[in-house]
Structure formats: structure tokens, C-alpha cells
Amino acid sequence: MKKLLSIVGATALVITLVGCSATAPVNATSNPVGSKVGEAETVQVLGFFFDGGDASIKTAAKNGGISEISTVDSKYELLFLNFVRRYTTIVTGE
Image (cartoon, one colour):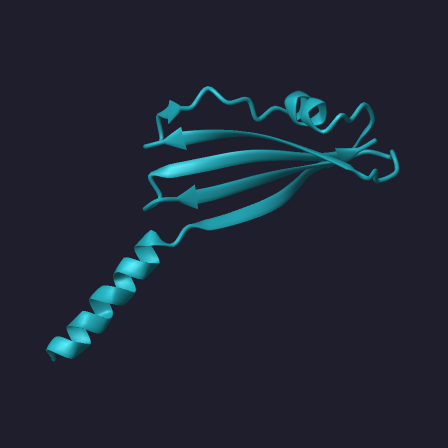
């Protein structure tokens, strides 16, 4: 019985510590898909506090040197016991 409880406890701990992420499309234009990729991100702690980052489409395009946007994706990650969340905007284009 103790061994079973240890296995269940270890499994629960691993599930709690493992983060997850999801990426979803936000927008697409009629521009051809370019070779450049730009990202911008911000981090949220405890659901209230942001790190001051800028996850806007404009910043992501600027970071990738993109003047004509083709696609915009949004990535959402849960980190460290789900107390920390990272939001990333991914832009492709030329």
C-alpha cells in the first residue's frame, strides 16, 4: 500500500510540475508567407503581475524585421506549477 501511495504521489507531483502550451492562429493576410519570423512575449505571474513585456503584433513584426505581415499566431504556455504564464505573439512575413 505504501508503494502505491508513493507512485500516486510521484505521479501527481510530475503532473503538477509539467507545463503545457498551445499555439493558435490569430490572423492571416493575402500576403505570401515570408521567410522571416518575429516573436514578442510577456510573462504573467500569479495571474496579476506582468513583467512589462510587449507581446503585440507590432513588436513581433519589428523584432523580425517584417514590414509585410503574412500570418499571426499566439502561443500560450503554463509554467512552474501554473503560477507563471507566458504569452508569445509569432508573426511571419517579409
